[in-house]
Length: 351
Image (cartoon, rainbow, N blue to C red; front, side):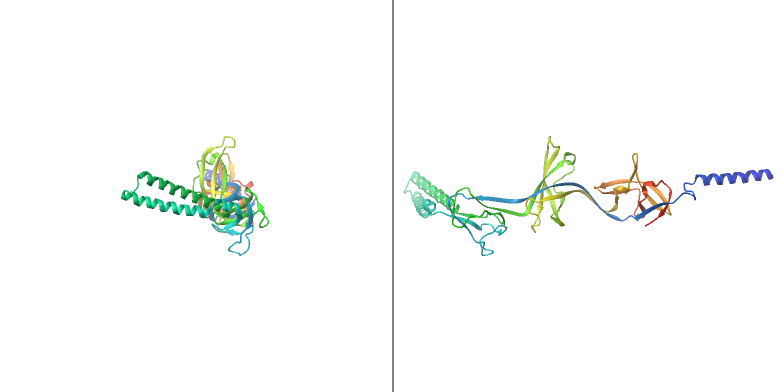
């Protein structure tokens, strides 16, 4: 009986020793210093980054169509002559070109009188035709004369209009070559350029791998080193279905609202095309993720023990990634010192 009790006690002791040897953390393991951070739910965007030059939606360049004396007109808004950078409104006369010989050759007054006479004759012939007083041929001849008179008068008006050059839409004068007032200038001389850049656009070229992802209506965030404190927004409006065989890219167009005129024509901008967004989700820096073959994991700390947590990734951008599963918002994530950790390592949390 005594021997049997001794055997049982030895077996119990051996079991206890074996269990202690199988524990992953031993009291004499060194503590690895780490820093931890609570997990805070935040937002993340999946982006495609590109860049390009912005252009105005409306631009018009004007040259003189006739030879004559140059006159730069006054800006009704300022009371002084138009200047580079001035705002113009639609139909503002910016420049006039005077040529008495050209104006006389148009004979606008005589063409107007001829039109009035031709119309009176046509109306008279219409009335007589209804009463049987003239033939249909006579009526048609009067109608032809009236029509020709209308065309003659309209053409005269068009020629006369060449003497006054007006803005076709509201915008900004971005080019205004200097000429001395009253000097004779030849036909074909540049006069001014007006741009409306309240709306802008930019052409983009994207790698072919994105052609099935990019859709019309996607939002685009735009920044420029010229506007370090401002962010503007655009929308993808056009996408080409053709891929360039030389560059393996496809073209698209982004339209940009620029009501405050912050962007200037020709500016170089950075564009982030937003493919997808998530809010109130777990987002961590990419650099914290460790990899072992196909397994991706991070470390979290619980009671001075580091635990390896296999994770599943969601959307990502250049620096951050969404964690779909594997950790929760209650975990304390190791953000420094994780490089030397193993599962169940003892750690000492430092700040």
